Length: 152
Image 1 (cartoon, rainbow, N blue to C red):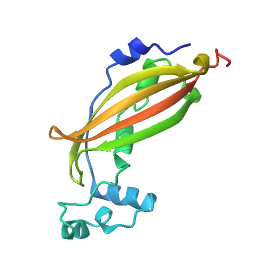
Image 2: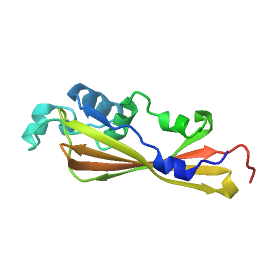
Image 3: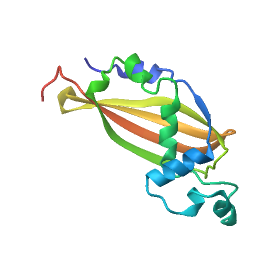
Image 4: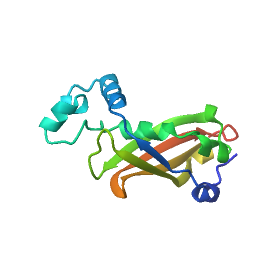
């Protein structure tokens, strides 16, 4: 079944507000192999002129997964999670963010399109991240949905 682009564009995704905890940032930084102390140690970050530990660049993507139902939009669009592939993601940064920041994530579906005669459908989700109304970053993720009803 083809994804209804108009329905996707009209879909209201819930906003999420998260306070970023320093220990989670250290864990994330270590997990991705980050060794720069500004991502690991508050004193090192302050010595470098930052108010606290810096948020590693790709960490913002993981915050969206903290919503009560991070893949609820797939259910709303009747997309079977078993047919979904991660297509791509990108980040456009406007300001640095730090441990202790309260960040708001506002998500929306910004595009739906098909390729290979509809055998593959693409859903683009854009997330605006702000701190007290100040733009921090715009995230873009694309999922690919295999449509079993179409053979190309």
